Image (tube, rainbow, N blue to C red; front, side, top):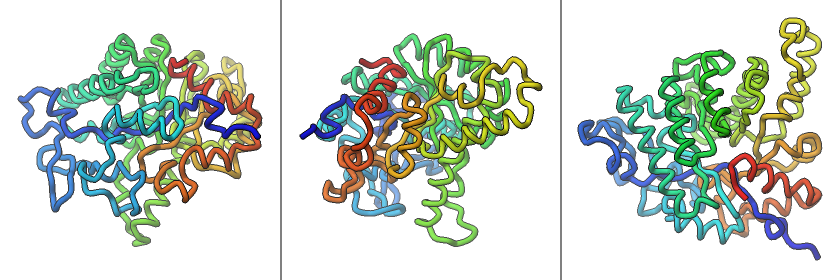
Length: 388
């Protein structure tokens, strides 16, 4: 009898989140800013993140794994949040229990594309808080840098500052950059604009992977339900539509010539799912060939699907029915994730519910050849993030 999937491979989970401890910024940012620095207060018995007197986030909302409720039934605060969500030693113990070798770490408070830092208002404070977060995350991952991999936040609203921060973080040992997938929602040019070329160039020169996490745009409609369909239905609608935002993101990157101009830049579509990839690429190839793109851009020497194969990656964590086609066509461009500890993560309930990663893998991946699983669960991610 063959061993279980997670027992056969050193699994790398390419999308998890860190519930930031309450002192991330108050312990690292200049006191001159007072309570404009992100800090935690209690309101009606719940821990909330504040900037000044404005609430900007809730630790319990980011920390749902193992919780009995579903949004908006969040944990109240740090007293209820398992230590594995904010403490590095506890995270490593959790990973051991879940048979996960390494995890790639993304933020919460600063936003899934770093756009949350713009709520701070003052450009100097925004940049100081981005740098403080990047310093903190590197310190946190130092508990075991062979298993905990930080992804730097990027002050994308200031291109020269973003380039400088990419260069600084590369020197510190970072391997991955978080870039907003929907910058137009933050009053910035769209991704396909050459405005962003200095960022792509800086990441390529540093050998750093560029990550586009879903939910990097304007999430105001999480709380805005003009059709009155209900919080839970609206949450499901927004979460699913976010996957399609990354379809647009990938289309922008390819059609905007980013892959052509920066052929060594590796880009990851994070928490977007993967089953839609074959259709989107087939559609792009069809439009590319039938609409004369190469006549307009003779310098584009590859088809969209070929640019994708060379440079772009997607990730999955709950799909079953659509996986076979994408793994057959793009076995070197697909990565595994859990989204721990978010509401849609791979470990929200008890083992008996069949939602833990290793149980999911047994259902979804049992027919996939080990040669492909080795790439999907370990090898591709190890190359992208500088792991062994």
